[in-house]
Amino acid sequence: MEDVGDLTQSSETASEYGRPPCPNYEAILRLIERLSLECKDSGSLLKIQNAIHSYKRLIQLKTGHCKVLLEKLQTVENEVNGLRKKLADAAREQLQQGQELCNVRFTLKQEEEKRKNVVWVYDKMKEQLREKEDQYNKEVKMKQKLEIRVRELDMDLKTVRHNLNTVLEERNCIERQLFQEQNTRIIQDEILANHLHKQKELKMAQEKISSQLQEAPDQHTQCTEKMRDCIQKYTAACK
Figure 1 (cartoon, rainbow, N blue to C red):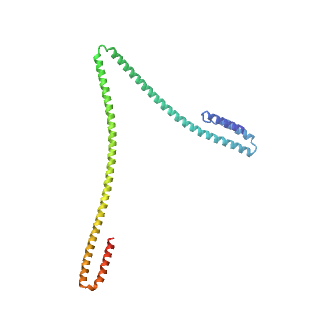
Figure 2: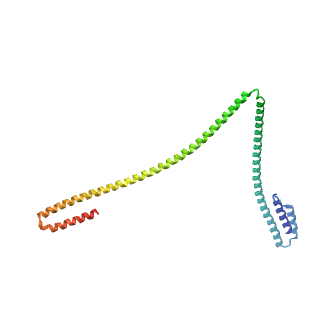
Figure 3: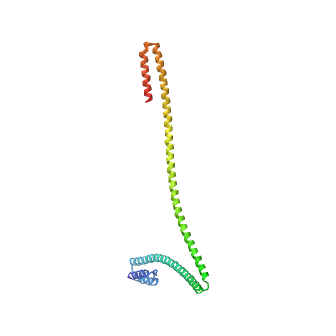
């Protein structure tokens, strides 16, 4: 059993250094043979089998851990390769820029050497360069102004839209109020017409009662009461 522990410890030590655990199968076989010879009962044999199973489980565990480490290692290697590629691209670009700079310097040197003979060419090139720079600066300023103007117009557009929405809401509110006022006016006109009609009916009733009073003085009291009832009914209807 102590030999099994030694084998387990050796595999754990190997995995700590980033290497997958390699089972020492020959040592295991020798250990099994020796333990089998020394084994005299089923209990000891069971212990041997348990030790072997424990070692197998440990190997499986270490193998899984090793796979994870290998995947991480592959990922790191891919990142390193990517960085190396970027570094190589940057180096090539730097070399190309250096060559272009050398070419520019060489051209300037030649131009400087020939300056005395081709002063007018140099002045012309310088003037063209200055004009291009001025044109570029003008374009940059114009672009900046256009961007500012676009932002201002965008803000104005948002303001106009907001004001338009406000006006539309106010118009809708006014239309609703006007509709309500029109309905109220119609109701008031209907009430007024009804009131005038009742006044006309009352006047006719009064005239009829007066005529009856003139024709039948003895019914004066009864007519007076009837007129009072009509007035009360009219007053109640107006309320």
